[in-house]
Length: 585
Ligand code: AMP
Image 1 (cartoon, protein in one colour):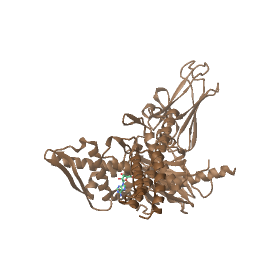
Image 2 (tube, rainbow, N blue to C red):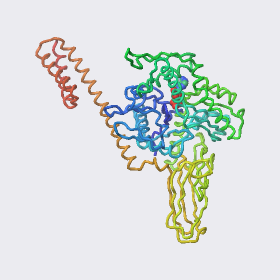
Image 3 (tube, rainbow, N blue to C red):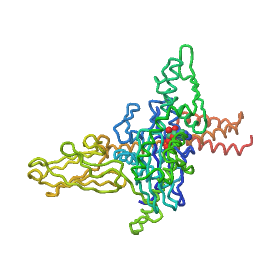
Image 4 (cartoon, protein in one colour):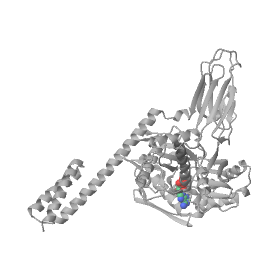
């Protein structure tokens, strides 16, 4: 499977892409020249899909057509409905990935069809599978799903000689996690992870919005939250102010004509100080300290054992966040790592490992990891097990186990001549099985008749590189065997659905390509018209009159978007211009 593999950080708020170039990981800018692309999608009235900065800008005008932070819904049965059409989180994420793929291909002048995509360490199997599906819909073979903190650690540690214990503190737009990673002799081992899937910069923005709304209500008695368009305007302004306050003490929030009254439009004009921001978000920032300490403890370490702190995610630029980390580890975080880019860079390093493995396999060399590439050891953040009689929970793979891994356990029947057993598969730490997250049902049928307690059913859990679980139940007497690949049942896309979504995604690319060809043609036609008009001026000469007629027809064809007419009239006009060049006016 040789070919270009890219690294993609598919973030809640922003996404970023990187490739390997001459042994170095390099960030690839999008078509606007930006190194990160907002993970925002807008389906406009013409059904055109806008992604990134353009979609973010369109949000205030199209609040019902714009989707933010879809990553928070990955792996759930959430749907976004636009123009009556429901979209799955996978489809929306695929639109983002498709845009990134498109930009990468434009930049590289080459097809990109494989990717390593990063996900938060806390993502469940269903969320990982949904990410994989999103890649597939976008036309990318997802070679590996890797954890964001691991990617960051690789990007930081790949060229460092000395052994280290890294703390990767990742606070982005929508998720928070902290990982303790040991790097010994080029081997990366995740010792512990802790976090909160539902905490990030979006929550800080929300706190500012609530404060602005409350302030406005007190001053004018008007609730600004009545209108979604207004909400997006407030949110953008709040985020802007928050970002400014990472570098300055005060920021002015000015939104003219934010509300209408009988006596005219009202303006919101408020100063937000850094101190006020800190009071608004203080408890949220503080809530990251306990998990950070817990992660260090889970790793069997104390804060002084941490050699390096790496910051990931835009929200780590907030001074209060940095102070809070220093409080936990008494150490200054590294300043030479770009928190927005480090994850994508790590994904690119991982892609180079896969590419070199491909090359080795292709040249039939030994199946071994090249010595200069990082080796990663992962830990599962949740236990995985099956529900048993009386809702007991039989754990097969313990939390914090390394993976890929395989575990087996043996079960039997509870009734005489019982011919089937169902094992509900759960993820979580609760003793009562059904209070954990249900993933799927593993059911074995057709057991030979036997008194209870006699059959021996072997249940095997295999957790692969991407932390996707394959569960098998085998009756050791008859050899009957069933296997399920586990993703949460409610949210699984079937092959048909994935096929349809991928087809729609390809059609979008075709439309975009057609659009681009059309735009180029229109530009050429317009500059030809401009040239001809300049040459003829107000001349009444027959050749000039003839030229004017062709220009008028071409203008009409442009107004009607009649591509074949445009093409033939452009050819005519080019000839005419040649004629004009021969005639001296
Ligand atoms: P990420 O998910 O890593 O792209 O992080 C995005 C989050 O970081 C958003 O909530 C941004 O508003 C926030 N962010 C980006 N830059 C800054 C900054 N300089 N100061 C504070 N927050 C920032």
